Figure (cartoon, rainbow, N blue to C red):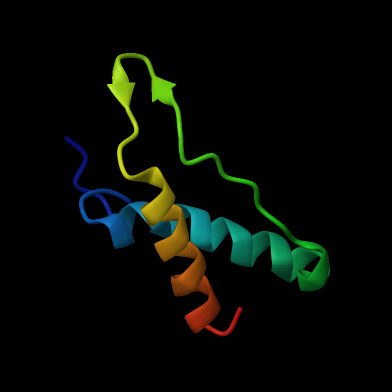
Length: 67
């Protein structure tokens, strides 16, 4: 099991996405930056549960950070 800053809690797992969005937006116009996420899917034998709520929370967290 991973124990770095990008694992564990939902917030930690969303950190990579949010930091990537911020980095890309810093290099190009932020108004031209968008992300598409699918809340449904499977990776190997693992099913992504509650993905829609996780993406919604990531969007809200990013909006609250002023980005």
